[in-house]
Image (cartoon, rainbow, N blue to C red; front, top):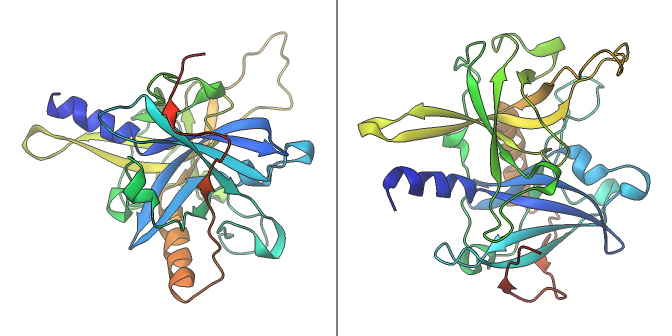
Length: 276
């Protein structure tokens, strides 16, 4: 496989589809990606994915992991219990003040055998776009994920959509740590990493995480009979992942009560994925 194609495959292996379960029933789907901070492994996604509303509140998340990079058809389902309240199974924070928490969470994956048993890739602090970096208006981003759950069901790989920077990157949109993109996004893409693709050294390609896609903007004044949706979307900035995982890793290292937050799905034995 050519180096550039291998690099693209590695990029896709950073992601996993998230299925939200309530009492064993699927209530929704989203996107997540792996992030390694020091020796601590996290699943990054949106806060609204784990919080949910009403009957859509998940008590478990189900992700799919590859058993081998050479046999991508072989996958295993993995369950992550979700507990709310004081003992919630994820890390979050506010960006100061009394506002709601940012729509990004880090879910600790404490099973030490994950890395040994399964084939996936993890972003790290060096893969994050620095907030001091520049993104020009109209710059193209890759939004990787599982829109409406759509993906390559045989190899269980996500798809890439394109979006463009729609607000001044140097100015936090509406005084929040976000910027907007112009692109066609769907449910299921929540938690997708927004990727900047740049030339690297010696003709290679460099990928940087610019942020986490969250939700589409709409206007209450929009008349559906006359107006299309804006196709503008919120992206939470990458430095929030840096801050969140740094704080989470510190608490984890200090012995915070981080329970084993993942286990194999006993009802789903390892088997080739099907396109049913």
